[in-house]
Length: 179
Image 1: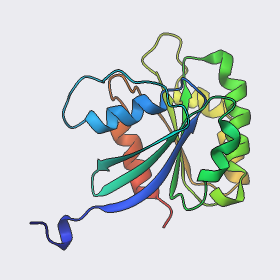
Image 2: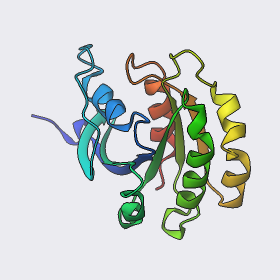
Image 3: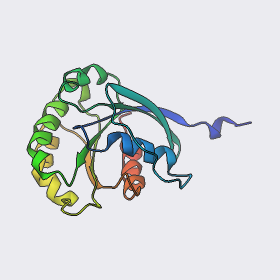
């Protein structure tokens, strides 16, 4: 029996990142955050998965696209109409920082994503050896990439396992979605 003020606004966002960065785990954590339930076992996405996640006054339609090398060329087919981009980085996988920087650079240079806010999630920040968000910001060259492409961007450390950092990160995204 909801009135007009109880409806949630729907918005579509794209979640990308290299394989094993934790994209699917983040979606699962968002789905189970309010229940306080443990994170269910997550199977890596091959292809794509579309989930609806309620957050504050929004209903996020999240396209979780697989990050395997052979899947990346099809990412661009999902760019059209996106209101936000979430790029997930494994903050503890230093050996993949160079690769993820190159991939992120190619993604945000696509004209279809011009003006779309970018949320970078430094996932697995709870693991030993994980880089903090400030260090990752420099390693990923975010200030230069963001200014060059006129993106509104933000980086936040998080943990899909515990849920730490996700509420503030998605709060920023909610406040900065492309109108």
